Image (cartoon, rainbow, N blue to C red; front, top):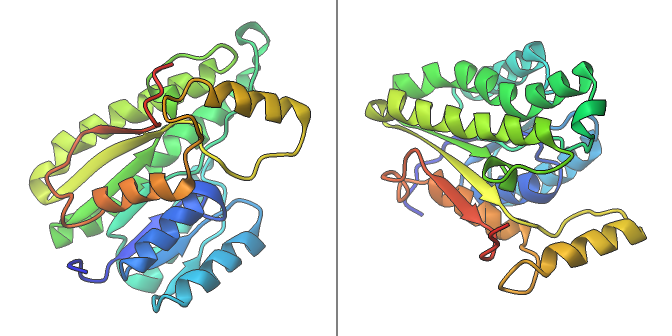
Length: 248
């Protein structure tokens, strides 16, 4: 391990990609700040796994779709560890709604969670990164950052905006030793409800993947861990697709 112990804040880290990322960074020797909006038990389970790897952990529950909660989450991390060196904006919601039936409340909620949270948390963590002349911001977008999807206009807009924010931060803070990148996972295996509609959806997604299978959360986490490392220092302002070759 070449990285000196740092502190990583990963939103939505109770399960799936967030959980795998927290454990991948803990395996690198970094302290981890875990976040969820409702399921504290899941975050506590991840914290226990991370602690077994010899790192310190903190659980900072809160709704990243609210600016005040983002401030509180980052504040708890800063109070405990002094700085957040690695910020992974992973938490997201992906509701489906036809464009003409979409309420203003739903539109604003998706943009808040899927895009504005990255703005609020980056603003809170960047001063400490600037002080250290070292920092990593990794946003997680999904394929909505590349393709527009029927029934998910709000999600597609939010994730395209997160890609734009990524490029802007990469240029503004790159000379401070801070890289900003975005990871776009394809269809990933996870905690899916056991119902016929979901089974059909997964089968349809798998048929589009040249590798012939869903990705694993750990495979996305590996890409995030690289971007968060010293070895990934020259990767900046990039959208990294982890999707098995999926094109649509």
